[in-house]
Amino acid sequence: MLTWKDVINFSVKGNPTPDRRVEKTNDEWYKLLTPEQFRITRQKGTERPHSGALCSIHDAGKYNCICCDAPLFDSTIKFSSGTGWPSFTQPIKENAIKYERDTAFGMVRVEVMCNTCDAHLGHVFPDGPEPSGLRYCINSESMQLEKETANDK
Ligand SMILES: [Zn+2]
Image (cartoon, rainbow, N blue to C red):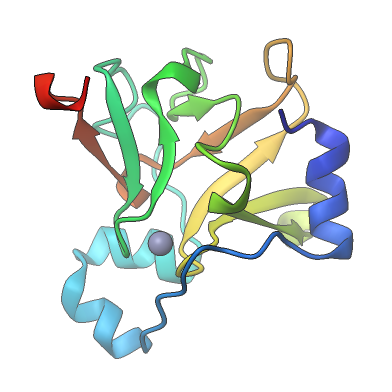
């Protein structure tokens, strides 16, 4: 299980190697995404709190990157943080997410991105529930829910 110490280590010393890479130009992404998805994932935007479609959804399934469809999180690690953004305590697997120190707006935060295509997802904070203590605060617009079907079981 990842903890805040691991997150800081990744952001300082380098990220885990992804299983695969997807790289496209901004023009190519722009054609594939809605304007809001593009603004958030490729220009590091943030959606308004409580505006995201996935915020209050707790159906079983996987949350995949809206850009490259790589699995990022799943419903078993989602929790209600009350912040207005979908929140998770862990990535679906250790190398799904990459971490970068973000000093925008005069704050020191840790940005989280898709490790496959570098889509901006949100930030991670050390005030989540035990046992990991992590809170991944993620924009709805950067993910799509792949609902679990009976065949997956
Ligand atoms: Zn991606």
